[in-house]
Image 1 (cartoon, rainbow, N blue to C red):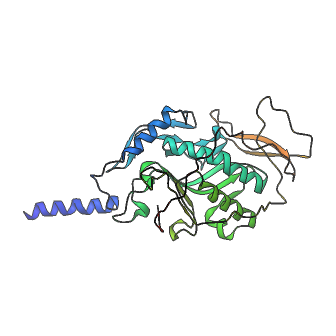
Image 2 (tube, rainbow, N blue to C red):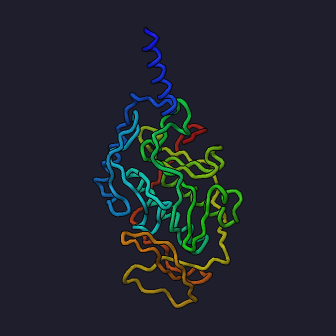
Image 3 (cartoon, rainbow, N blue to C red):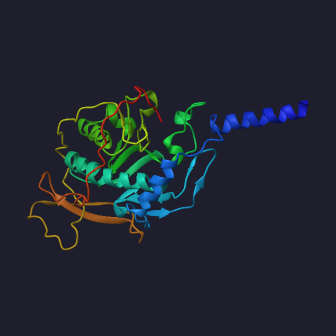
Length: 307
């Protein structure tokens, strides 16, 4: 081999190593990924909208990418925005996020703070990379738009609850809320990793829909936590979203008014909601569920896992 050819080959190898954390360019995407996404659309689990728009296929390096991605800027028809910008997610991940936010996150926020979440903060979704960017490791679920890193939540009064600052050092109510969201996520997602699982997840909660076995039914949830006691912020006024049209108003009680960010297709900057003060007797912050969460049976999985 001539020195010129050897130099070019060496340069290519170096570039691949720098660019892709040793991604295998010849890997093929597992068949279940595209099959699951197609079934999600066929069953209309997600109906494309202004808040969740179809986007072009992503055909990344090696097996990276997704056939029919969605650009998501909000959940719950615009009630819960995504960190001020849109993210890329698959259909099934979007559907499961909707279920988790509606059935678990919002009730937890209402229980702990007396008001709903209006924004979910993220540290990222799609990224063609290996797990934790480690050389030679398997591809992360982020490489398939099948994961979401939760950095925190913004409440209706503008308060922000962050994993990085509040998981260990926040007030008892904020700590309890974050732990409750992680515990509930284990009922919806197949992988959940938060502070205490490993050093790389001290500032966010990673959630995804990876297949840890052939059937895709096993789960990996770390750290293992007990549900925190029903702590509540005694100074928080109770606020719920406006009742659905045609819904009878609740009994007359002391009222307070809040203004919070509301992103919708009309570009309305603010919306006003009212709720009872310091009382659990408020209307639910979210509409009734149309189905049970995806509950998966426990299974034997490796003792350590990272994304």
